[in-house]
Length: 171
Image (cartoon, rainbow, N blue to C red; front, side, top):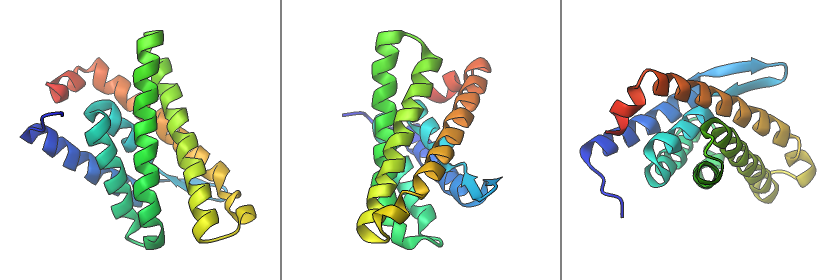
C-alpha cells in the first residue's frame, strides 16, 4: 500500500479542486457548445499523483463539479472519470515500459482514457436517461473534450518537466 504523507494528501486535494474549477469554469467554445478543461487536470492528476490518488482526485473532483447543475450525472461521472483516469495511467505505465518514449506514452494513454470516458457516458446515458440513438450524438463531443484535455495536459507536463517544477512536486 502506498504511504500517504501530508504533501501527497494536499496535492490530491489540490488536484481535486483544480478538476472542479476547470470543469465548471474553464470552457473553450465550439460551434455547438463548449468543452471544459477538467479532463486536462484528470490526466495531469494520474501522471503526477499516480494511479490511486490521481484516480481519486479525478472521480471525486468531476462528480463534485456535476453536483452543481448536472446532479443526475454525478454518480456516473464518479465511476466514468475514475475509469478514465486509471485507464490512462495503466496505458501510460505499460507503454512507457515497452516504448521508453514518454510523449508517445502520454498521448496514447490520454486517447485510451478518452475512449473509455466517451463510451462510459454513452452507456450511462443510454441506460438511465435517453435512447441509444440520442446518446450516440454526445460521443464525438466527449471525444473532442477528452482530446483537448490530453493535449493541454501534455503541454503542461512539458512545462513542469522543463522547468524542473515536477521534480520538486514529486520529492
